[in-house]
Length: 198
Image 1: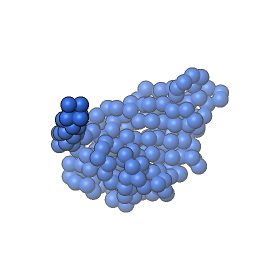
Image 2: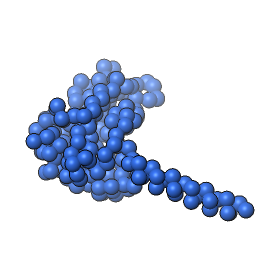
Image 3: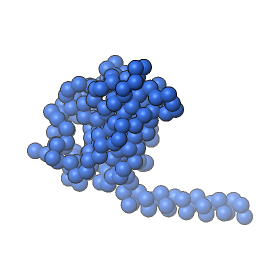
Image 4: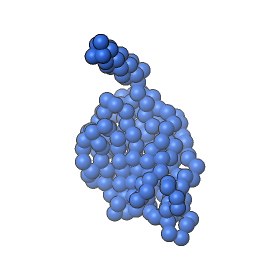
């Protein structure tokens, strides 16, 4: 059984869903099933003085409850801060592309278990460790997002505690058909703008 095949017990999250309880049914991370893996450099928050330094590991596996070619995204956050007054990490935000779509979420057992999660109307998924923050030297459990998307790229996710930092990670990108739809909408808007000015 592939790593993503074990996600069926996860929680279906729809755009606009408020934060709620997070399941943790996964036994481990993506392992050898990953088709892509990225570990960011340790990144300090901004603006200075730095209050925390984070590192994000991300991975992609293929095949989930949305289809054989649909991609699953895996994230874990490491608090690499070594300053005396460093803060614990309380949130990770992962952007999802428009049009927003339901996703299925889950997390691995272990340290750094989530307190809650949510999905805004734009589709971005936010993981929260508010009641169990990630202190200096600790790493979160793997957080998992099953998506219907079939393409990915290296962009940024947001790591937060009081201040925030954008950290490079693997995220979904729109399908070619979505790009075509967005381009068509842009052309319709431009045509309307020209008529309005005429």
